[in-house]
Image 1 (spheres, rainbow, N blue to C red):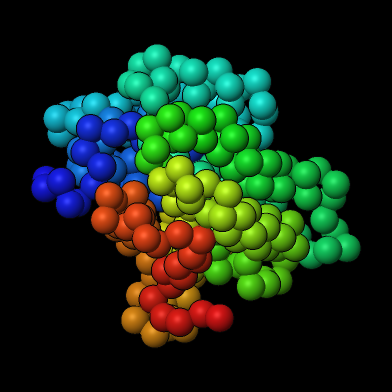
Image 2: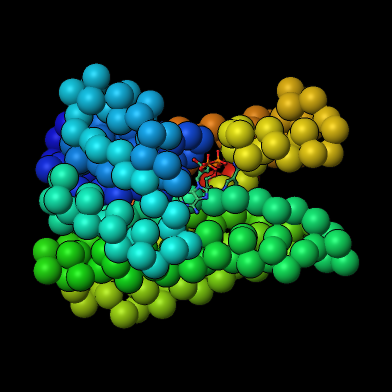
Length: 256
Ligand code: NAP
């Protein structure tokens, strides 16, 4: 890989990297030359992603932490630093859904989703920023969603994903002077366990669910985790240093 393609030799932490989009991002950043801490709820769950990276000649370790818990975030970041070195790239990707119409949404549905996406991104960013400031280089990439624009049954999730956009812009303003950029990727429909779970919840076969979604998307297909990894690779690259505070919709067509 050329130096242009990514901050080779730097350390990245990707949350929720055991599967789905996070796993694809972790593998892509490793292919770009970064050492990657594969952070997920349970350390053992990260083994598959770590194995994929190391067997391809990359460096990675698995880290277990719940991103919504400050003590676990502190311990997880410490483990990443001890195992790989100070992080320069953070991808806040860990996520959950607890969909329900407002009148049926429980306190727990609300708190869990806000806790993982929004508080999780806050805790992880706060815990890692000092390492980026020391290096005078950093890349914070937050996973928002097209649901930030509003989506039936997702009051909690859309609030968290819209909140992440404001969070991203504020980090860009505060941290820019230290060589740190902050950007958000807002995916549309990506085929992962998360969208499969939505199909199951509404009683539609996943194939049919994807086909119906694809027919509404200008490029006539649903997204794949690698579509998001490609954008994350760009945002993490050295050359993307003048791109900050942006929300990039990656949805196979325009969204506003
Ligand atoms: P996924 O397949 O469900 O994977 C999410 C990962 O996050 C899982 O490995 C999960 O671990 C982990 N995780 C959940 N809670 C966590 C916590 N508290 N601490 C640490 N890790 C945690 O989801 P995905 O589809 O890849 O989505 C990744 C991100 O993209 C999410 O932020 C999601 O909201 C966003 N996104 C997805 C889509 C889409 O269409 N798929 C669209 C827009 C945005 P467990 O397996 O243990 O639960």
